[in-house]
Image 1: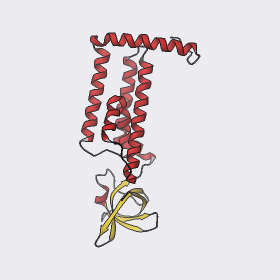
Image 2: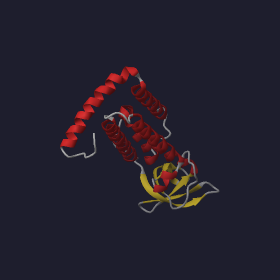
Image 3: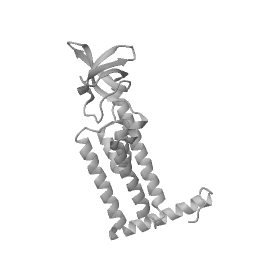
Image 4: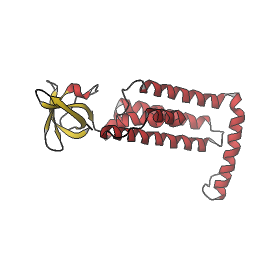
Length: 220
């Protein structure tokens, strides 16, 4: 059964249970254990996603309850840390390639792959809620490995998706380490100097063309 939305209308925090009102106006029993691992206790008025299952005493009960996203989630530690990591990565990337003409195009590519990865995480979360065809985990990992891992890091807390599942988390962190290591070798390795020089030549030709077309005005 796909997840449905509702509002936690009543909540007894001392006893650890309450009732979710679904779209049909039914009150469905929910125990605190249905929320899984949480940083803060549930509060009445929260919007949630949930499934229902039969219960001998209550008729039905809510299970696999998730709090629906709201702007305040952006201030949670699980979102601020990935945001800081991504900011440091892009900032370090830009400074490390300050003398290279290709940094603009490479950064543009990385932004595109990261945005695509974030979108695919969102689509997979939507599919999970509606029991539709899922985005294969292999696809998500390949996008992350291609440079889209910043999008994956932001998408997980943003969509509350793939945040606890193993081995997905371990593989994602391995992908991050591999990406940063490969980029470090590319920046500092003498063996990669010919490739950096070739990319600079290609980038300069593109920049000259863009300037001639009037798309950029800054000096090259």
